[in-house]
Image (cartoon, rainbow, N blue to C red; front, side, top):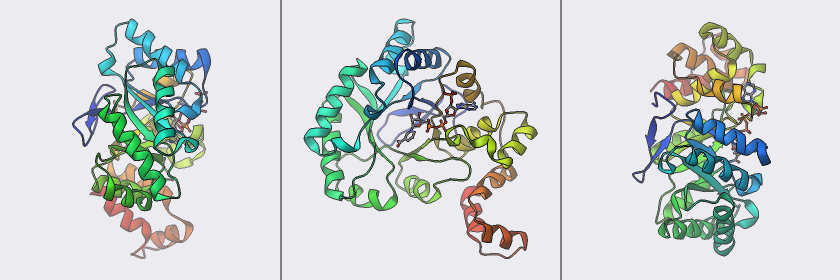
Amino acid sequence: MVESLLDRTPLNNGYTIPGIGLGTSGMTGKEAEEAVFYAITNGYRLIDTASFYDNETDVGKGINRAINAGISRDDIFLTTKIWKTDMGFDQAVQSFDKSLEQLNQQYVDLLLIHWPDKEDTVNLDTWRALESIVESGRARSIGVSNFKRADLVPLLEEVKIRPAVNQFEMYPGKSGQDTNDFCDSENIVSMAYSPIKKGNISKENRTMTLAKKHNKTPEQIALRWAIQRGTIPIPKSSRKERIKENAAIFDFSLDNEDMNFLNDLDMNKGDKKRLRDNIPGTVEIKNRRKFNK
Ligand SMILES: NC(=O)c1ccc[n+]([C@@H]2O[C@H](COP(=O)([O-])OP(=O)(O)OC[C@H]3O[C@@H](n4cnc5c(N)ncnc54)[C@H](OP(=O)(O)O)[C@@H]3O)[C@@H](O)[C@H]2O)c1
C-alpha cells in the first residue's frame, strides 16, 4: 500500500503509478490550468484527463508550468482517454494525435479506452491502435475504463500488450468488488473514479461516523478506504483547500472494523437484516472474507 503522495505502485509492465491523483472532469480554461499546477506543486503526481473533458490544452498548460517550476516530467503521471465516438483503429490513432498535440506533451503515461463498445471486435481494433501507440513511444502504458469482467475476458485473449489499468467508479457503497477482484487476479491495477461520490459522500452517515472517530473529513475517509483496498482514487477538485484536504490521508489508517463498516454499505436491506439476525451465508459475509484477505 502506498504511504505518501509520492509513493508509487508497480504496474504489470515495469512502470509505476502514483497512489492517488487529481481528476479534472468538469473543469476547463484557467480553472483547470491552475488546479493542475497547484496540485503538482503541492505533491500530486498523477493527473487524469480525457479528450471528452475538453480541457487537455489547459491541463497541458498546468503540467508544463509545473515542469518550468522545477518538477521533472518523469515524475508526473499523465492519463488521457479515447472517447466512445473515436473507437476503431484509425479514429483512435487520430484522436490520440490530437490529444497529444493539445496536451503539448511528447508522451502520456497512460492511455485508456474510455468506455467499452458492445462489440468485442471494436474494442480489439481500438486496442490494436493503443498497442501501436505504445510501440511508437507516445504512451508508456495502456488500459481500459468502465470495462467489466465480461468486456475484459475476450480482450485479454487477444492482446499483445496487456492492459495495465482499469478505471471504474468506486466509493464506499459502490465497491465494484467483482471487477476489482478480477483485475487483481489479472494483475491489472484498479483506479477509482468518483471516489467521493461526486462530492456526495458526506451524505452517508457511516463515513461521517468514521470521520468523527478519526478527526478527518468524510471525503478523507472514503479516499483512505480506496487506497487501503489497493485502488487508486482520483478525486476532482478545483479548490485549493480541497486539493490539499483530499491528499491529507497518509497520517491515519482505518482498522479492519472500520473497513468492514464501510464495506457493509454495499449490502442490500435483506443482507443487513440477515447479518443483524446473525444468519450466515449473506453476500456481505462473503465479501468480508474477500476484504479481509
Ligand atoms: N473513466 C470515466 O468514465 C470517468 C467518469 C467520471 C470521472 N472520471 C474521472 O474521475 C475524476 C473524479 O470523479 P468525479 O469528478 O466524477 O467525482 P469525485 O471526485 O468523486 O467528486 C468531485 C466533486 O466533489 C467535490 N469535492 C472535491 N473534494 C471535496 C471535498 N474535500 N469536500 C467536499 N467536496 C469535494 C468537487 O467540487 P469542487 O471542485 O468545487 O471542490 C466535485 O464537485 C474525474 O474528475 C475524472 O477525471 C472518469
